[in-house]
Image 1 (cartoon, one colour):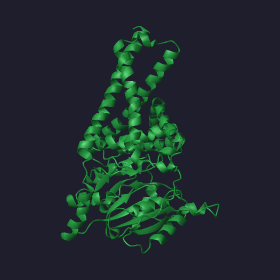
Image 2: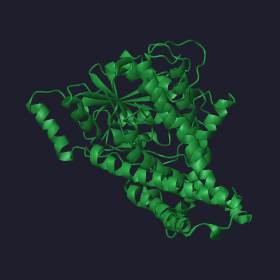
Image 3: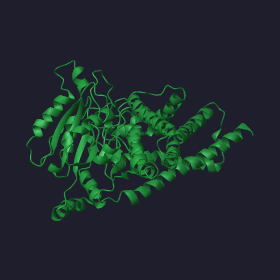
Image 4: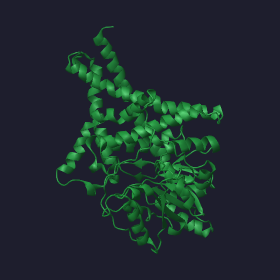
Length: 475
């Protein structure tokens, strides 16, 4: 086959495949909106309080865990927000988990630590009417990380799972559901009401919920690449996550809600896992048959401001996915009829999908290189292909700007620059074709590093951006 004909056929296949994947995503969006996002209205949730009181039914007690190692920049606002959720203050509590190592490594006494700020907030909220109890627990430097672990006398590496396993021993004995949010989370105000509604409606049979996380709040503090990444991550949690959770007991590390007894039954988190959340979901299903329900209540968070931070975060996530796959593949404790379908899903939603998307993003860059070098003449392409390109390219571009419009209500505009710079930040979204390559890069890197036995072995903390101080909401 002549080289030019090969490129023509390749461009035809590429155009058809990209169009198919794009319109499939639109279909998922419609399906997610019709099936999963038909959540109870706020007035219906508020009536839950009245109905429970009238029927003498006790609302479930929630313990909200907030792991906060080196989180002095964001933890105050998070406590303010979570202490103002639309749920009776005597039916939930906040447990903020800090790390003793932060105090051991403190160099400047004038700079407040996470512990300092948490204690200030506890003093501020103590005795406040209608507010939940706030507890501060600090993980010892030598805690071994297990649910019923001990202090070994030797320093142990800090991980999120280790902190969460330490924190659960401090929960209120009434606790029915453990909720997990990251140190910069801002969930919807009715989130606990909705989970209580589902918990009571199912008679306690539903024990796991995973909600979407829109990491767009610090949009105006992000570099151009990460702006695009943040919007498409929000889209994935909005449209794709509910579809994914039909086939995989996927759990994320935030906006996650687990019945306390279930958590204790399966032994808590695996403190050695890079992706402790996905590992928890897979193990909960294999050991108890429990499957998470998609929670149509949003929590906003940050995306790492620089691409290096994003890359390290997603590299850990991708490596954690592969770690769960390898652990399950080598395990002999679960029956094959349960583990094999999960292995297939983990492969197709991980390995195969990451290679496919990376390849699709390399193809247009190859076309551009060939065109510049004279190896491919656009005019030689059939009219139908050139027409398809001319129609799809503006569609893809406009879709990216649509995402900014769609998720703008979750963006903190108080961080936006003044004047024309505010609009220049949005114009940066035109970098989309290049950004697509970099979105998938950490995940394919995880595959390549695993193949040469150089994958990450240590848990890596996600960097934060500073936020404006918020005032305590009135009760």
